[in-house]
Amino acid sequence: MNTAKNNIFLIGLMGAGKTTLGRRLAAQLGRTFYDSDQTICERTGVSVPTIFEMEGEEGFRVREAAVIDEITARSGIVLATGGGAVLREENRLRLRARGTVVYLHAAPEILLERTRSDRNRPLLQVADPLDKLRSLYQTRDPIYRAAADFVVEAGKSDCRKTLARILQCLQ
Ligand code: S3P
Image (cartoon, rainbow, N blue to C red; front, side, top):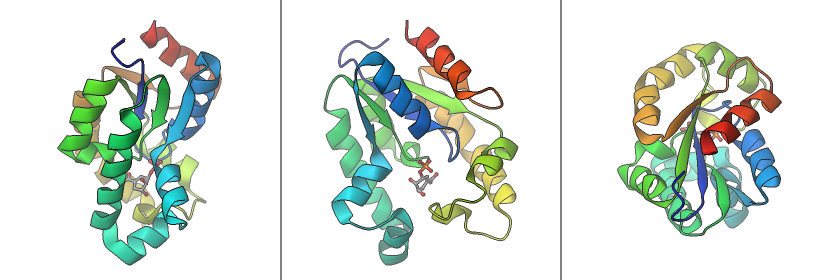
């Protein structure tokens, strides 16, 4: 583990379980948990879809980069990043330099099941969300892999098993 800052950063697509697993991981390790989307929403007082609507995806990405810079500068934390955080090089560099990066990997079909009834993800409010998830997967999977210290399978198995896999990597 990168012990310089003792931080753990979770990356991966929407529905991979970054928030759920991150919260549990933080509780288990006695660390403070952050979620970049949640921090952005707390600060702006509006939801992610509203930010996309008012400022576009680019406006959201600017806010996301600022929040990631601020949160990753802390130590002893677990951070669940938004699925698109790795698209910006500045975020990738900060994550790599300031903690251990874990990519939670799951296939698009599983991600669809987990995000199906969620209206809070503007990128998936399209006619064919599976097609969208497949295309995001194709573009981003190599980026997540290159950005990560560890790749953890977060597909079919339950939360407990995935958490155990993450903890094993961090030993
Ligand atoms: C996004 C993922 C979302 C949120 C925004 C954009 C993406 O976060 O940041 O809707 O580009 O993949 P989650 O991965 O937590 O759903």
